[in-house]
Length: 95
Image 1 (cartoon, rainbow, N blue to C red):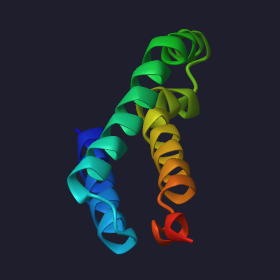
Image 2: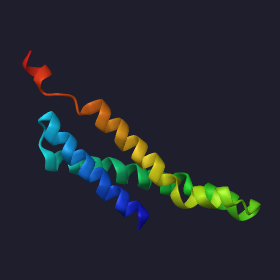
Image 3: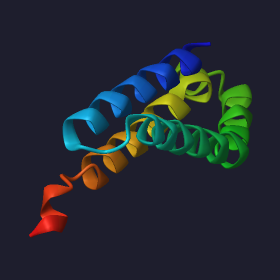
Image 4: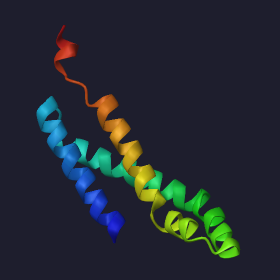
């Protein structure tokens, strides 16, 4: 549930970034959601199982927290990188 709220906030952030930079807002918001959810999916398939295994064996509250919420931080970081790196102004193309 918390991840879904963050995904909506990512879409809103991408939408308003697109409006400022002259991109199509809906397409850019969808791109933000795709980036966030693809990173989340990859994290869930490849990293979470080993974290769960470690958390079960060590009884570490930090590992339990990471197992539940680390995908949000990683997905948000990748979405932020994508937005900052590729949201450049379209005026550069005209020069």
